[in-house]
Length: 94
Image (cartoon, rainbow, N blue to C red; front, side):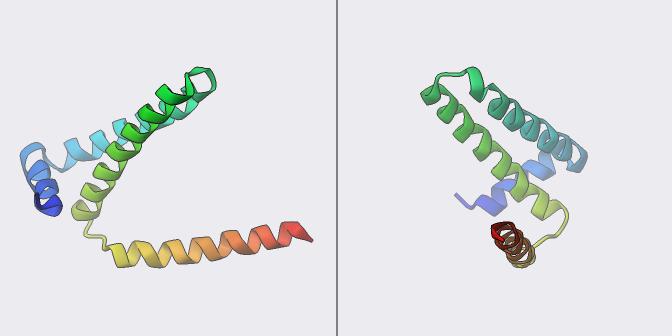
């Protein structure tokens, strides 16, 4: 299976707007799963969380295609943000 081709087929079939709204839905489901963690069986919660993270990652990959964003661009931002996080954590040690 060619993942990128599969994402492109999904976008072609359902359209940009539909896939953007699906992204919103999947993020909302992940948020709900995390919120339910307080009252869920830990094994059930973990299985649900894994499933919701997978859904969000699939939709994120479609968003990259839709908005012409490369993994390289994201990796650069992650490095900057992780450096900022590290700096904040070091500042809090003082």
